[in-house]
Length: 366
Ligand code: GDP
Image 1 (cartoon, rainbow, N blue to C red):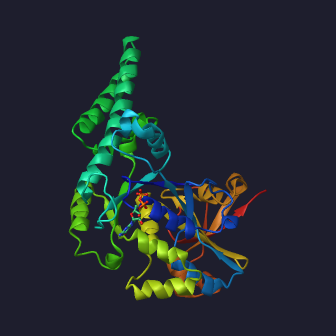
Image 2 (image 1 turned 120 degrees about the horizontal axis):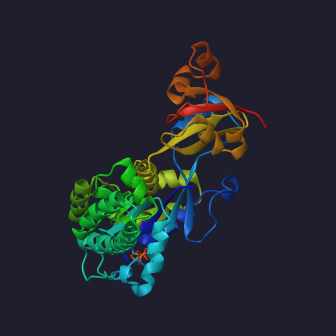
Image 3 (image 1 turned 180 degrees about the horizontal axis):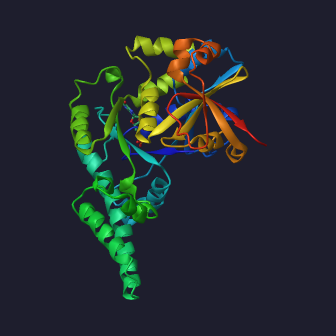
């Protein structure tokens, strides 16, 4: 499964947020394929469309799709030099698909800030610099290896070196590798390096409880927004403490009431999950039978057999075809039968590229 890693300096609220994530955590019985690890929190991806599908199909149960967050604590200044177990943490970041960078935007005299004052841009810079230095190290080592290989008379390494030099130049100028425009071939060259600054990032601006519903007046959030806009990155203002309080409530009704009292339209955690999902370019398709209505995560661009493989490898291997209706058509039709009458139920084959919101029924050989 795809994962987002939570990073940030100490005392910015990472653990608080991660605890809220694990408390809110999904029933593991539904997600046996998810990682079992104390540093991984499995959450359900909120999707309003499931509600409507449930009304249409009235199944025995409804299962949202899941997403994993990894707690990567301990990233400090000097991590790229191996200080404070830093390298171990960088290795953990290598394994995630996206980064959620938590930035402290709340003011609280009682909670020490590592650099002595609330300074979100300074914090972002500190973390980014460690990631950039670690990448610089990887890129330089790779350049050295490629040079040696080229001396053996092998010309193919010239293009590789050229690409690596381009990335090195950006890193030297404090720019992340993802800011470099690359051809598909160049992306392939870099893929095995698993560069940290190549991973997509979103910023979670941790604000005070009072600002949970509206943080427009918080100048730090504004600074983070301006910075992120320059990178084309998204910012999710969130109050980690409030999320923890929501997560601790027992029932969904209590949660909904508390969220409304706070003046929020939905929990910050839900907004964060949706933003991370979007950041990774993920799509959701549905299966809708009387037993179960369920959402499944795929990568944008996946073809029908691969999408079927997310449910079970047998579905992919034995794929024959899929019956597909788009969510919008089905919701408008109000029932499978009406959608069928309207000719909105399509038969699709192996080359069909699955769309977000497709309701799929697979036919396969066992
Ligand atoms: P981490 O080191 O980044 O994991 O940070 P923690 O989650 O342990 O938080 C550090 C301290 O900041 C803890 O005492 C939290 O209770 C506190 N904290 C986290 N979020 C907020 C917040 O929104 N407002 C205030 N006042 N304190 C917070």
